[in-house]
Amino acid sequence: MSKQYETVIGLEVHVELATKTKIFCSCSTEFGGAPNTHTCPVCTGMPGSLPVLNRQVVEYAAAVGLATNCSITRKCKFDRKNYFYPDNPQNYQISQLYEPICRNGYVEIDTPSGTKKIGIHEIHMEEDAGKLIHDEWEDCSLVDFNRSGVPLIEIVSEPDMRSADEVIAYLDKLRLIIQYLGASDCKLQEGSMRADVNLSVREVGSEKLGTRTEMKNLNSFKAIARAIEGEKERQIELLEMGRPVIQETRRWDDNKESSHAMRSKEDAQDYRYFPEPDLPPVIISDEWLEEIKARQPELRTEKLIRYKKEFDIPDYDAQIITSSKKMADLFEATTALCGKPKKVSNWLMVETMHLMKEHDMEADDLKFSPENLAKLIDLADAGTINSSVAKEVFEKVFLDDIDPDQYVEEHGLKTVSDEGALRSVIEQVIASNPQSVEDYRNGKEKAIGFLVGQTMKAMKGKANPGLVNQILKELL
Amino acid sequence: MANMISDETMEYVGILAKLELSDEEREQAKKDMEQMLDYIDMLNTLNTDGVEPMSHIFPIHNVFREDVVENDDEHEKILANAPAAKDGAFKVPKTVE
Ligand SMILES: [Zn+2]
Image 1 (cartoon, each protein chain N blue to C red):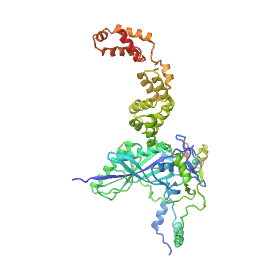
Image 2: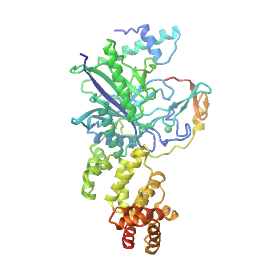
Image 3: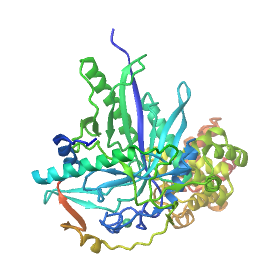
Image 4: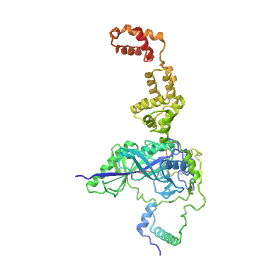
């Protein structure tokens, strides 16, 4: 009988903080600038330059720590991690090894067998590196330091996860907490959230951890799930053949669905950390911590309770709407504009979800404004447009954030409630469909549906359906 | 008490520091490092019970910047320090992952 294996997974998650400036200098963190346009002597490691810590970085890091049940280190310090690589202009990265800002926390995830706590070993603050672009033409590398010095927090979990599902649930939970705090937008594809997976396997029942590998370059939840499955199988195969798992860093190639060992950077594991002499310690007083606590925004659990109480929307709807910060923000802003929470929730739950699925989008990709959704709801609610036209207009709002008032006006989509005009169209429909008219008069109630359809078609969908029914019945 | 540093350690430290030393330089560096270790051994004989390890020599803490953008685009000045540049970027020998 073959052996039973268990997968043991811990995660190192890097999150780019949503500050306006870098961690140690006043350069902008804005995305997409031309190479090196957001740089200065500090973030390019020029001799003699000195770092000064961005207060907001400490506040975001502490806020994430509080929201993940960590204890906050009242006297924390920075350390130098020494290594040579062209994306690292100082030849060291300022990070935290000995006194990280947060320790010993946890988040709870839902699993098929109930709630499970995933421990957080620590959260530390550090700076991001620059970007290397390979130049095929001259066979050299080009360095852009715009990202150098962008603030990061690294969240190190305990090896508490046992499957890809648990990893995804944990990441989802972290993302939601951090997005709600406004500390980062946490987009995996764009790299503002990055996960390295530490994975080992062991025989079920064994207490000893197996040799682990670290996997990098995972930029979607799907890639993470595939990489975990792939690595688990690779390690089990090695063990089954009686060969050892080598402790190494592997790079996942999602196109090939396989990983390969990364060339070790000449003894790169010896980082020779030492206390950063250019930065004095950070002392977080009771008062400061209380201020940070007081400023914590409403998190998901609190929103769920409030939505049910304040807006009287069903639990299921509230769960879905709060499953992303983006959706919750859209819901609240639109409701504030039109005052119809149930209608807003319906548009988000039904049409928005439907179109998101159709276009393979996530809530974070939504582009339409609360103003335009509110206008659409008002138009539909006032009967200015009927429900099928409303769906059609919503698709335009969803895709291009058009102004529904203007669009309805320009395309003549207002519902026709002019009885005289309708009556003459219906008379024509009756005249050209004698068979259906006869069927109806012979008691085939359903035949009226066909006549309503024909009228709507003639009116290009803009007729008031109630009025069409009424006039038809009268004329028949 | 004198510390001894092996040739292997010297080579390893040289790799970490990206330094290529001549035989003469290596012998000198070896001596310097041995002296440093001796000095640290001496410090280690002191009684430091109850003394908090020091990470910063000045008695200051919480030196912060507010989160306000103050730096303009000065990439030309920055790139003036580059041994080689191309397309607004620092040009370096090819790196492989
Ligand atoms: Zn800078």
